[in-house]
Image 1 (cartoon, rainbow, N blue to C red):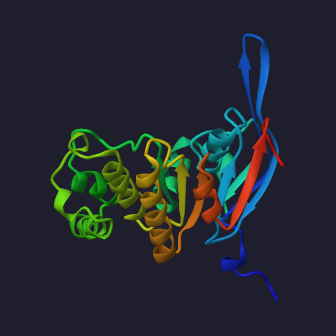
Image 2: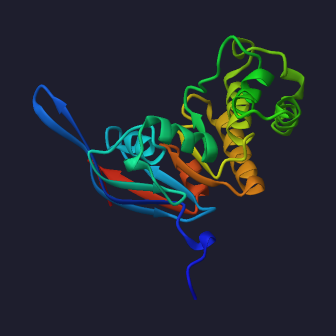
Image 3: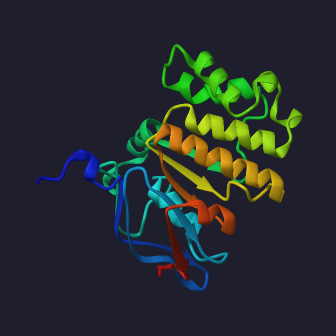
Length: 227
């Protein structure tokens, strides 16, 4: 049978590498990474600090460009695009959750979640954002700014913002890194509930063994190489 669209990997890399120039010469952050991620998969990228995890995530998401190799995302070749092209791909297909939440301090919880929808011209941004904030248990915090929210509440807002556009792929970089263990466990539960509901492909970088253990696959980086 011929391969259908749904059978094609949502992310595929070939010989992916990243080298930067330092005062001591070239520094190889990533080398020869071949990685295939299927639609709907959840995958954890683990490894010690400095192993290249966050760099790999940035390359997969088109936030950075590789020194060698190629990245295909949803059938599109990121490495042949300029920044505007990659930004368009991110807007259409990708959601992000970061360790530091990355909420805009001058906006309320509702406005932070509405923002990606408004940028896309969605006329139902407020209704969708409000519904998702209710889903993550923050219907009583819509008008609160980030500084009025706890760390766990801020990460719930960040999850709502990431999922509100129903992205094909969610990239998460240490999403529980700034949270205590109890709050982190709640965020992990919510992340996977939303992931299952929205049928999103999940790619995350983590030091959290409990979080990695919830994923279907775990891949390990060591000194820039995929083991």
